[in-house]
Amino acid sequence: MTDAFDKCRLPEAGALAAAGLYPYYLPVEERPGGGEVVVGGRRVLMAGSNDYLALADDPRLKEAGAEALRRLGSGNSGSRVLNGTLALHETLERELAAFLGHEAAMVVSTGYQANLALSALFGPRDVLFADRRIHASLIDAARLGQAALRRYRHNDMTQLAGMLEAADPGVGAIVLTEGMFSVDGDLCDLPGIAKLAAHHGARVVLDSAHDAGLLGAGGRGAAEHHGLQSAVDVQTVTFSKCFGTLGGAVAGPRHVVHYLRHSARSALFSASLPPACTAAALAALDIVRTEPERRRAVMFTAERLRSGLVALGFGIAPGGTPTVSLRVGDRLTCCRFWAGLLEEGVLANVMLPPAVPEGEAMIRLSVTAAHTGGQVDRILGAVATVAACLGLLPGT
Ligand code: PMP
Image (tube, rainbow, N blue to C red; front, side):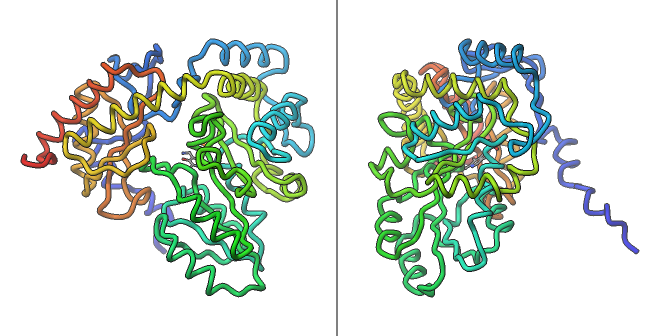
């Protein structure tokens, strides 16, 4: 017999590590704030965080979390459905539902679990129409669910229209997308989806992991940005990005959330969100509601990064958001790019297959409300230096 563990030998990872190009699991030693972290004993610019509003280091979140930890303990030792529901969870659910404009919400322990919970909605008599670029957690939800999965090209409303047109009118149709896509930071065509869904009687499920807290005048996300909150039936959010902590939630009609509380396996069979994270998420929600200047600050900084990259000659997806990816192509060059940036004092993210299609390895950069214009210029300077060395700039 062959050894079932043969698949665990990853020669490519070993080769990358030997060449000093292994881009994963880099331990952060300290987080001094101000857009910087300490790795390998050096202060570097963090250009790979989704803490867009720079709340993870905010003293108000820290204090709310510490107070809840002291009062309620470090964990709940059980799932929501049995012994693990806190009054604090229910407060967060009420406030979140009101904020997002839904009847109810269910808080779970990560954004990943919030998306997995959706699988309970994807029944055997349903068809799921999903954008090709959706996040792995939504693909996993589709796999765990029983609905047939049809995927349309990224934001291609003509293809989606054709698919909906061709669908059996006897099935339950659900359109599944992200509000702000996690790799390129571009926005979904929600106006197009809303129109098609209304025409065909399809439900719209939106993952607002990256846009809740960031987009829209009130920070309610992509749906608010497009003025289409009532077109979204069910919305998932995470607390690990704009909300500066950990956790996630599904929001929607009361009967749907009630159903998920009793059938979503990721919620039923996993311990609930600890007190500290729950209290920190509540504190973050308060800040999201009352400090719109944080959104303005990060969007201003994002614009500086994006226009700087365009000036360097990079083709980037439109969107105006704080996340942006640079297409590099092959894996090795991408890892060299990442290592070169780190050498220059900038910690970015690499996106290698299977996170992205084969041949589309990329560097993902993101900025937060903590970054100054000067720091963005340092990121741009590092990108220019490394890209020029690798022959990736036009004319080099
Ligand atoms: N949805 C999207 C679009 C994401 O980018 C992520 C996190 N990368 C998640 C869901 C999962 O969120 P969490 O990290 O809180 O589990």
